[in-house]
Figure: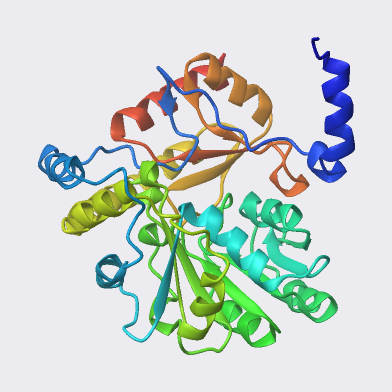
Length: 367
């Protein structure tokens, strides 16, 4: 007996939540043979000496055993490498995406509010929806700055269990002022999560002050500094917060390969810092060159990407498709939010990649 598509479709419709069926999966483009400027990855590979050290570290791992429950060595290495205060605790996740889920699961009953400036990292919204919370996005201003009065009003109205503040913000690149962040922390009745995924490319971090307020944690990832393939994120905060959040962490969520590789790489933290510095140095020349193109507006960025709005002769959708045809991948936000109309997000690449992008754009816009 064979099962027809209609039989399966009926079971899916009757089983999968309606709101999930209406969603689209998170898009990941096929990138083989392309210049990849769409995912804010570091374009530089680790030096051969570091890769050799990683190979030695993972060669004899007992892959037939679950990871050890003792993460004290990794915790100490992460705290030292990334400036986490001694009195803070850390929680590790399979990327920051998992940490976002854990916080929503731990803090929110069905219908509780999760709040963020908007547009921002799309997974704040997605995790809230997946975990039965209610997402509230507070629109940025027309120039994509934080609207503090609107944020404070939304906090008073919705009393969110969680407030996510991505700073620098993705996809806009903006860095919220310390004064605005402090005002939100003081107003928020629940936990404020400061997402510093792009902090290595900015001149500010909240990490030294993570213990100064009773309702703050700082979330980071190593994905943007050359280790995207590891899928490793960490959360730093008061031990009381970390203890509660750790209760919903899946067992063995950090595999032995990730642990061993990270320990090996962190002994060469200077390599990661140097790569981040190269991207910071290349960001402003790329932004200036983009701003000189006809009909292009570049928004200020403190991250490893640039948001640009295309207008006039060619809109964002057309430019995106034209670049894709030339095997140059960037991220199209033209239809993602009204504030992002005709906006494309461009990761800072290696110099040759940036040059190829600019040459292609000049050809496209002058055709």
